[in-house]
Image (cartoon, rainbow, N blue to C red):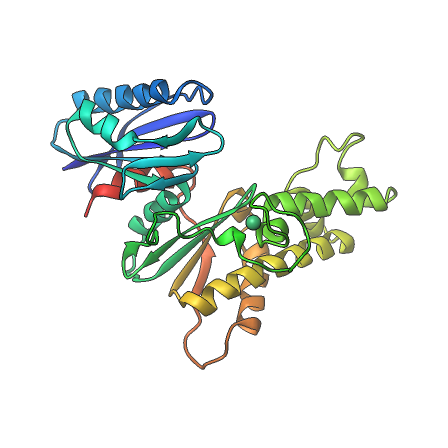
Amino acid sequence: MYYIGIDVGGTHIKAGLVSAEGEILKRDEVPTGARRPAEEIAATITALAKSLMADAQEEIGSIGIGLPGAVSDKTGEVIYTPNVNFERFPLRGVVEGECGIPVRLGNDADCAALGEYSALSEKVDNMILVTLGTGIGGGLILGGKLYTGSNGIAGEIGHSMVCLGDRPCSCGRRGCWETYGSVTALIGDTRRFAEAHPESALRKSLGENFENLSGKSAFALAKKGDAEAQKIVDRWISYVAEGVTDLINILQPSLLLIGGGVSREGEFLLAPLRKRVEEKMYKSGVSVPQIRGAAMGNDAGLIGAAFLGKD
Ligand SMILES: [Zn+2]
């Protein structure tokens, strides 16, 4: 049995024919054209799926579609995707009608969690993926299943509160975890420090017009022993740790993965994160969840989408 995964992003739609073992046998990618009418984007998705179906040597179990926003796999609707032109759109019905096989919908962060989960070599019942990027996304695998809540949109971990009444968040509240612990927040911290300290090594490393400013800037200098950059990194990791500790206190997974490009900092990020979480988590004498970097990178979302309908 094969599965088709489709990963809808703001710029590209990726599609893959995936084996039951999680191997991508064939892939395709086209521009999203995200501002086109929803019906046209749906037609692109259908065309990608049909092309992979035509190539498959085995029966296709289902088509899974990962989307960057709120979806309901119960009603088959894309509720809202801020960067792709879907609002209350019955995507499942449209694609199922054209392709004639079951279609499942998922949020892209949930799909990434499912993809990472499917690739684990050890048996794990409860796993959380925390993706640090523009915001903080995540997916919850509880009891071996993707947990999406009663309405399909559970797992918005970036919008938990770490600092009441402070930095404004896109969700309308102030002080959400992602306003402190995302890579966007790290970039903001780096920039504010550099602006306040024009003679610092960090400021000089960023280029005249901040053209070199990224989530890597402070990490790169900290690795060279720069104490100020290390302070920025430490403070940011402490914010990441607060949210991770909340998740662990509430859900006690046995494994928590850190994803997103910044996870390539490896132990420079993970070792201090583990230390802080172990200091802060609710003490009960039980085992501490494993915290490690996500392993799959960009394909996790595609494979996870394919596996939405596997069980
Ligand atoms: Zn928020």
